[in-house]
Amino acid sequence: MPNPNVVVVIEDDVDIRSLITAVLEPVGFVVHTAVDGLSGIETVRRSNPLVTTLDVSMPGLDGFETARRIREFSDTRILMVSARVDATEERLAREAGADDYLTKPFRPRELRARVQALAAGSSDSPLID
Image 1 (cartoon, rainbow, N blue to C red):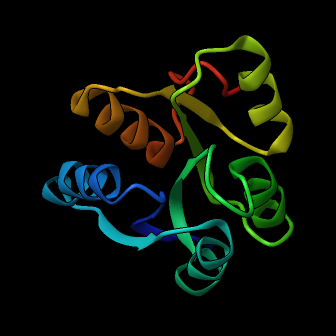
Image 2 (cartoon, rainbow, N blue to C red):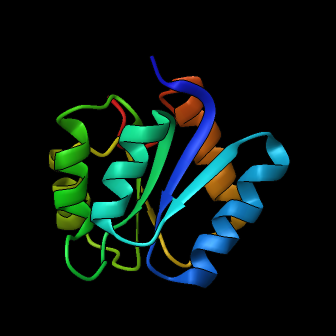
């Protein structure tokens, strides 16, 4: 069973990683971060988060492959975050195991609401069945 209120943020951009952390910690989430796909997979394995935010475009292992690998062992709710606004990419994110998809730039309130909805098991997010 996932750890309640634990979020893993997998993001290569330090500013975005810091922003996501700054948005989620004040509302009670314990945030663990990773700078790339491989370390993100290990962070998810180690911390068993309720929710994972995952950048699509990272050097090395991209977000799609990272999500597929996480899905092999975890039921964490995955919020894919991408600078690309593309219906095809959203479909690929879902096929890789994402529960929701958010485009950059995002409003901090929107990010917080999406993560809280995923944590609550809500179906308010557009990619959730």
